[in-house]
Length: 435
Image 1 (tube, rainbow, N blue to C red):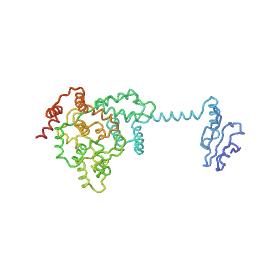
Image 2: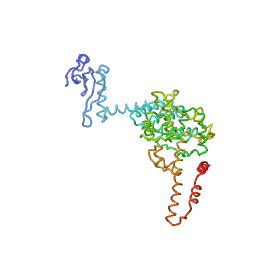
Image 3: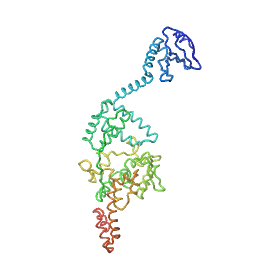
Image 4: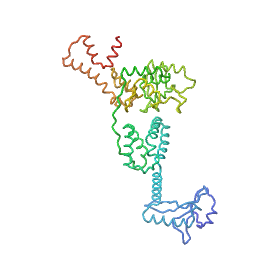
């Protein structure tokens, strides 16, 4: 409803709060501006607006609230808006662009640390809805604090261009490794993803040489011997790593509700799995004996299989540093080296059980299920070379029979041939069993 009242301050101040909003147009004064009106709201607010057709559509532009904006200033602003319309410009679009530019300038003034903090909050929300894993955030926090926070945390976002991004990653590579450099690149790409031009977007990861370190029979015996003097909880952790072949993070955070004692199954929830789906791990007799003993000794209401009062998370953690239990065990077992990559890592245990499984006749499909890989190709890319010799031997026998070139051999000759095809470690194990 349009009220034809005088466009004056006294009239505006006397207007009563309506049940429905209405407009008071500006007319009847020599300074009146056609299209300017005061909109009176049920909330009591009185807002100046200007209305004009633009590209065939009625377009309304908000000027400001009375009395913060006076009638005189409202008329001046309305004339400016009318001029913008006559020039073919939509003032609302210009205002939106100005806001976006202001927001962009404010964003550029942010430090990289502030950008990271905002990224962490968004990541935590995605964890709550099941889109991301808490472990992924822990890894990102570690990468940030160890390698990125000090060199770039205090810089403004705009200070990092493509050249600086490349130099940053070069410095990280010199100090650490290709793997760490790639982790930093992944994190920085994610940080800058919503910041217009991403200086890290076109930088590629380095091709990494896959680690293939596995323990042989002698090294395994030395490792087991080194466990004898360890506290029970550390012995149990290492044995559970060996007996299940699962990742360190899953074993350390193992919870009692994940264990099905009747069926002998450990069901690792989706939230802990890299593949983002639950993983059922069959537990051997030896693994179940450890769990049954720990269960009988656990305090009532204990959540974790390997609890700790010294950590924030409530379970044992392991950073593999000089004062860690893994450092102590591997040093005692003679499994530490001076150069980078020479020492046996906890993850090498997972690789060892998978490799031994394949080398002793297991297939890639079974090994993939054990490891909980999302795609069998992940397993094949790492362990297929171990499986190939087994396949080669079987193929040789089959083709020889097909071609009629197979020689008839006695049981003894066949056993000798099979023994000769064994690795040195397998032969040593065979001879030790014979003795």
